[in-house]
Amino acid sequence: MAGRLNGKRIIVTGAASGIGRASAQLFASEGASVLVADWAEAGLAETCQSIVSAGGKVKSARIDAGREEDVQALVQRALDELGGLDGVFANAGITGTARGVRDTTVAQFEEVMRVNLLGPFLAIKYGSAAMLAQGKGAIVCTASVAGLNANAGPLAYGASKAGVINLVKGAAHDLRGTGVRVNAICPGLIETGMTQPLFDYAKVRGSENKLGQFTPLERAGQPQEIAQAALFLLSDESSYVHGHALVVDGGLTASVPFLPPRK
Image (cartoon, rainbow, N blue to C red; front, side, top):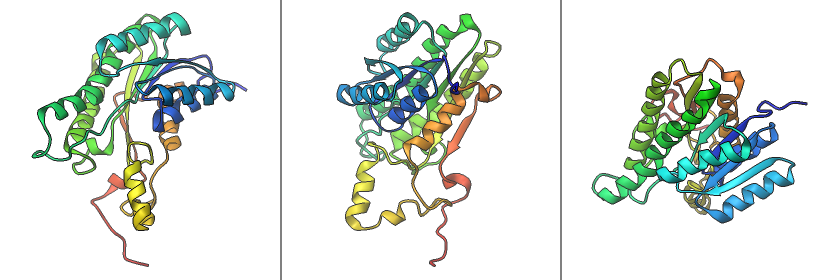
């Protein structure tokens, strides 16, 4: 039985854990040859092992997603070792260590922007260039609901993700007529390594049931649920979806913050 990505060659950054790992595993299970990339070597090795154990095809590379030379080399590896490039999931990102304007240094702000915004720009720039000759391809960037509304994360993080959403829309127009599609995903509260401290704190307080209190689904999301959205956007099923920021947040941004009456 053919998978939804059968025969496609796909890069996944930020693949050492969380959304990136879940996505790489799903893409491989759907027939793709996957080149996974991250800075964290141990996690990257675990991702590869899980894919190999399931019978998937995977190669790996340790990169800094916000460094031009690394992204150029990553795309070239896909061309050399996978035989081409059909999709890129630019998922690598960081939250940063500071929260607001007054406690965020210029260096901290620049680092978040470098990884979270420059990284997707580089993925689009070099990924699309590799796809132009075949006249077809798909690039997906991880944004966030924090890029749609304030206070869904640290200030620099939210600003970087707002930039990703605008970047994707602009790139879609810039690549008009090429056959290369560019979209974004805006996850809500997802249980990953990045958000684990929040979940751990809630468990210590015994308030896990409150983590999804602002969402109509009344729960947090899982990495696999974002992976399914990325699968759709990278597959031919989304052939008419371009320049779009797909919100996957359990309904969090469907209204102003709202707490239902106590049952």
